[in-house]
Image (tube, rainbow, N blue to C red; front, side, top):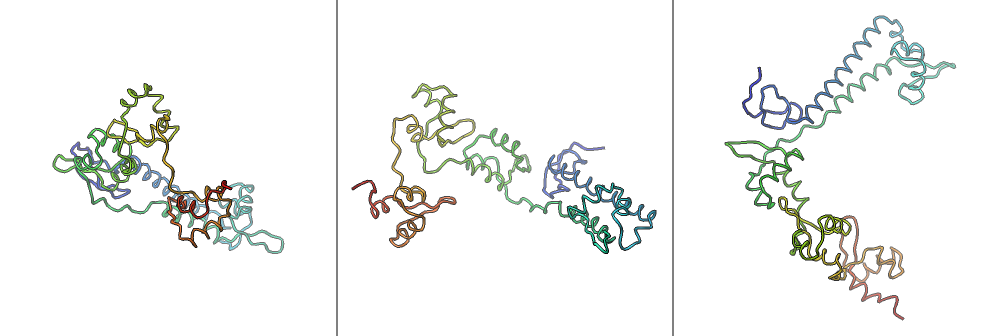
Length: 300
């Protein structure tokens, strides 16, 4: 008979500490329970194959032979000759050809079952490190400027681990940081429009705002349920502001503008100490200094 008292347990699959509501609960999530079930099924399948193999070994004297013909292999494994020859062609069953005969070593057949066991052990994921660092709900609210309800919505949707102590909820610091840091707004953007401000200023519907923002990749930030858009980027998209002159060329832009090969461009940049920056996997080169060195190819 199970109890409905809340208490801490260790997940039998990933070893994470979680709050169980019943004594019969063994896993921290549906995902772990599903993985454990699949693991049991695999082990049962391997065990049943081994039992079947042993039974056939007792009944079939061919198993004692060091080399078997494809027909004997088919009888031993309980499969058709067509399947046996297909496995031979694909290399799943190794063969030895001797005096025009195709023979299979009995040890190779046995190793097929050893391979199943090895795969079954390796399929289990590595043990997860225990979670030791936590935020309180108040700390998450203060750091990421979100409301309580939004934290719980995010945690439920993304399976963020949590625990309880003396009536307080504690959230895994690693998981919270991983989620909210990706959602954090660009710190270089200081001015924002709220959706209501955009509607009042430009007389736009919500659908029109979302379409324009998506089409122009306008940066946005979300605080709870409130969404704001970068003022500068939105004004540029609406045509009431001009985009700033970029400070860097991409390599492709510089090659096209100055009619240079990649090697020539890198030679100029290195020889004249032109500043370069790496953004992600792309290299960008200082626009003002490259313009000053090479001039505008359209002039003259």
